[in-house]
Image (cartoon, rainbow, N blue to C red; front, side):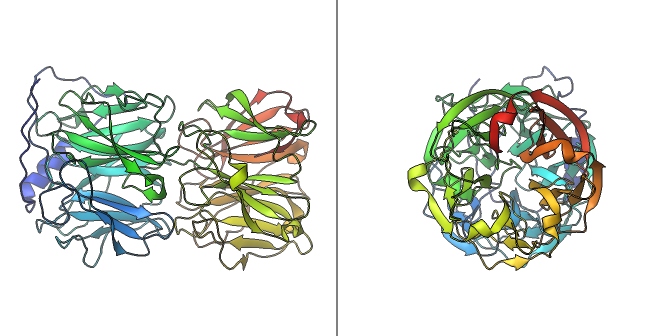
Length: 566
């Protein structure tokens, strides 16, 4: 198949007929497996300049820097490279961004962003010079939305495709001429296990929008071709490395970026967090990758691309599956237990004895902003450290960073999640003497802001666990066992660093000796946790997406020998 010739053109306003056609063509499919494909072979049309924010005809890139929440503009050069970044604005740490093309009909490329604190979706009109005008409220109620991405065959079609984490359905949001979006229309079921979507434009030139999706259960990507008539064709599977010559590539962010390198094929940008590398990969009219991957550069693990919903708080290996870390109480050896993505582990690797004398080990998420999952560890004298993760399943003991002293006063320390919606992982700690729960806001670089009290009485709870967003309202939550009733309680996060009043889930937790958060351990799109029974069996507790427990099973014996599980 011959490559198409690249034709760049100025973005134009959206005619009402085009909006209607785009909505009909993209009111899409039945299930992740796809519908029947058509056999007609159509040569691809040109890749449009959906992401040309400065009007020079080249595809650009907007990202959010994790450490300070600044929105950065990378001007594309048309050959797969970018100019050094320019700061556009601050305060974007709590926003999830999508580059959507012309959403306001003025011929200029715009952004849409979801505020994680409020669930409000905004449109940011581009000014044609790499900046933005006053934002427009496009929609509300986006807290349950996980992955979302632009969907349009042309640069001036700015619809959105989104996965609802509560019901697991795929929704299409048609664009309206005033920069808002229409109510979402459910176009597919069974999408709860998909955590990344990337718009690809019109790959095969049939006038219908195509997209890429990542399946958390098997780690593969799939290209879905739009057919019109409210369906997609059969999906095309792409390996976990997206055709990269290095087949050990795993990505935590994949975003559609248009034809960045000028070869006539739509590209995606993919970040491998283990090496902090960003790669480009193009797709042809058949959904196949066109080369072995082009390395853009390093340092991109510190950036949030306009990408998906991957939660890597507990993914220590960078393979897209959450893992468990545990220490043997006799040998003092800390080991990594690799997650299968099915609610179980399948093998372990000894990491070392550097943490043998620590009295606490806890996940920290990406506390220092380098793109890797880190660990907290506390000495018996009360000094708390961050042990930076390497992204390969290990931690760098030599590079540990002191959080501070005096942490021996805390009976519980948990972390890894963003409780105040600023895009940075925070820390919660219970003061043993007073029973007061303290909230420590993270600054994204391994430091912490001024703590805030969340109330007293928390010394009456055991197994305080930061589980992430258990009810899919966009805010990080907490569970804990009431010592008087032995009942597990759910404390919903408000997104401002505080918690709702506890709601009882179920009772009988006095038989457990540990409760540990593990993220989405079975790849169904919901936050989970594990509990160790006093008989040494480790049990999986699958979240149902509504702040509840949907399923449970035991998957391992002999865990009684572990004195710490994280």
